[in-house]
Image 1 (cartoon, each protein chain N blue to C red):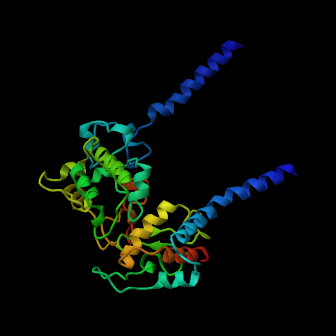
Image 2: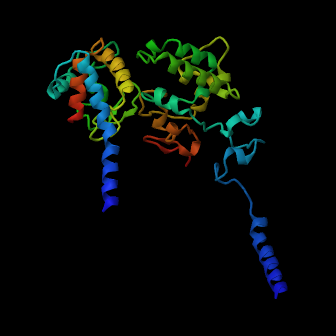
Image 3: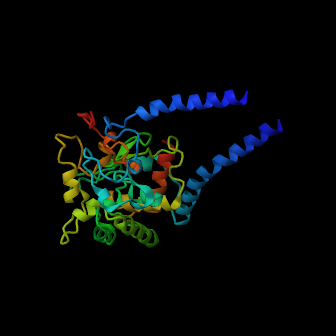
Length: 131
Length: 198
């Protein structure tokens, strides 16, 4: 019985870091001035298209990641498969602040032509978390 | 009693060695079991690769298989397959790492520490042993596209189209173990054509 209890505790604690990672990231955005986050707003931004770029590619998250974050994506240029963005499907997603910032910087620039605001980033992460 | 056992052991040894003596590695299957290292470096007629003229490659990699740095795979294998550093000469890697903001139309910038480390790795790994790909590039050229080296072209000159890939740089489309750094012929499966080695 004690053993079972111990194992349960350990397994609960073990799963914490994954969610703690995203919570910390979101807290960081709020500290930077964002208000409460909305999955719906994140979804809108995710699906938004800002027209085509010079290479004829649609400037949207969905171009590489697809509309459904639970599905695998495909890089529009190289064809390389991209693991799903939804943490519900891909456990390690969106837990490392550095990695999240690196890709937001590259991909917001590619789609919006500028960096995303903390509000926008938080909305997107919230949308992905609830996918 | 012990003499009988000795005789038995001897008999078994003789009998057991007969199939070994008769066995013939006639190489009827091109890449049968043995790795490049085991086959030695004397060269085999049916093997079109002659990298081995320069002797044993450091690290025990065969010419069709490389060990890739984990950090390199993570950073540079995110959007495309992590290409073996030997596919390009050192000067090409330096040039590429010097302008990651304009990486084939994308921004692939990294923090300085990571970029420096990766450049060091690429330069060292590409120069090691002097790969055939790197050496096939004329001295005046500094290609950024590994598909543009003479050796790359000659390696793929037997391929007949059409092949459903976005570009020839999409190695993993046919080289089924490209992600692990392996490009052995027996692993090739061309979409729409099947296995390369019939």
